[in-house]
Length: 306
Image 1 (cartoon, rainbow, N blue to C red):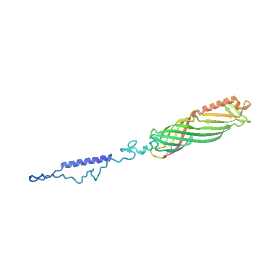
Image 2 (cartoon, rainbow, N blue to C red):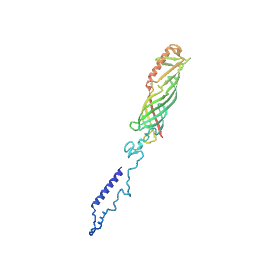
Image 3 (spheres, rainbow, N blue to C red):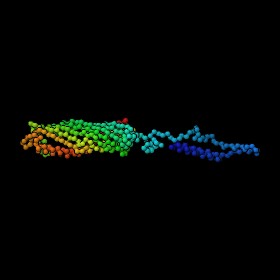
Image 4 (cartoon, helix red, strand yellow):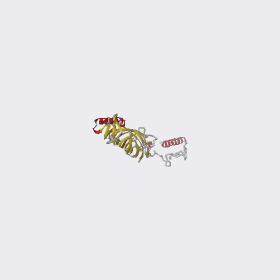
């Protein structure tokens, strides 16, 4: 628009100069003898030949500037002076990004697509399997940890940058632990404050399991990094942390074999006192792990936008 204004101003100035010259230039009238013939013609004023009309065919009017892709009426989409690339990827489902990540819930992947300028739709899953063999107070314990989750959520970028708030829903929570343990003969275990000695002829043994709450769970995370950068970049390193509300985790203990107490030994499956103490110990363990109802979510990843 600045170029058009300069041309218009120049044209107006030139027109005023020409008009002033026309008013100031004297006209020459030729005196002729009176006759009945037609009156002599009046001479036209002389104009400087170096004055060129800016709108002459030699200098055509530039007219309005041609529109630029991503701009409307000379203004960038998203505000005057902003590059059109700043809102690239805002159209719903216009592109996709794929990323890998690692964190508390294992290793996994995410897929994201834009919903609006400040919103992404994201879905993913995590997997982890690990077997651990340890001795706890002289008791061999073999445990297998299996983490499997499937989650869908929305990433909201309130300030338009990398910071995001992400409500989510875990539609599959398969996190659990299974294990076995054998108490060597002569070793002592304590259940609900009561000591029991494993019988060497039929040592105490059993299994245990821990389930991390419900199969589905709502959650929320905060983090930094946009899998679909609105700047047009193709790579990002997203980080997030938060929690999922999975409900109360549950531990189940099943012991068999013979236990000795006060000089007598017998099968624990038919001992009401042992069964009651085992149930109480199980309840104490469940109380201890109740904070895990808010299961932590922490991950760091790398994503590529296509």
